[in-house]
Length: 451
Image (cartoon, rainbow, N blue to C red; front, top):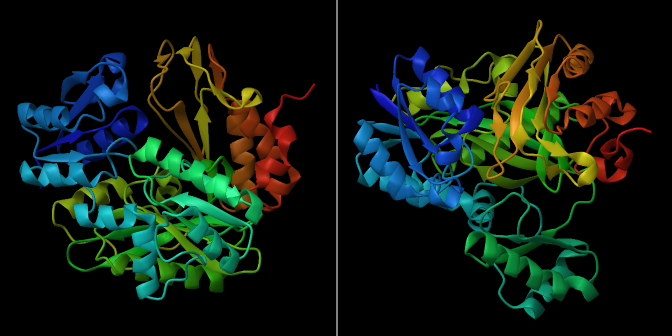
């Protein structure tokens, strides 16, 4: 077992990893930028190292500084959390070259699944259904247009590398394809340093379903159920729940089997998610794999009773998975991401000092956060300040608990998404489970405060 783990991240996920390490008797090292000097992950870690100025490019994204911090602090493993360097194959390779364990998949696995075109090819080989599209990246717009006509409009042009909605453009007809293709290539190159894009069929109103995967170094790969992540804004997830209201037992079994088959195809090790789109005709398709722990992992933890972060650490240390099959579900779970943003202003970030922070509580309520009264939300990073997770015996009880929790969640000093989330919980279509990735594009009134 590891003796000391450095967490190459910040915020609530850094605290989450620290707690898991404490339970396993492992010492921890926090790294922080100058803007995060007063953060709780710095306070609660056993050791801490400043790695640079506030901008992430000068601190949390500097691989040499993180490796140096691990060596200075005597860490024998690094947990990347999510975001930043979590899906960076070079970082995983550098850890290995420095004799430091990387708590995650191998560099090769990250590289294969991080390239969307390569991932599609890998899934095709083992029979996992993929959305109809080009066999690989396309460079010439006119050639890509020929393929788009064969696929059938509308189509979506996607960056082969990266994620988060960057390098994506929808072309509804041939006349706007070339321009969309060039814009997607330009944005992909700017965001990821890689201008490769591919083209696939655009699904108008799919559900976004992800299956939680865990694999070990002894050949075992299982899934721990699905999460419905369909409530999104510009491909960014806002609300997640499990089980999905849109799945039958038969469909859940088929999608789960496909997810495990896809992960086994690359001998996957650690925590990851197989991201799928479920069309309104009942057909599902592989979209991509996230080779890391997810923001919404608490949903699965509450649904199954499995500590995914501890499982990650144990697997990275060479242990076998603690379970051999999908555990039974325990009721229903909903997660809301609380951000310091203003939905009425196109989700404009709202950094600043938290004058009041009063979290909710009660049976079945979990709050993962790194903030406190007096904390200053910096303008340099993601604006997530808390994840509110509520569990009930069924979806109705989980939904009501979430409504009550949001009503008693008091944050003053910055604008947050709490009122917006409360409106979504009260929406008749959300309450009926009638959601897809275009839900917020139809329900635009949810973005505005009522008169």
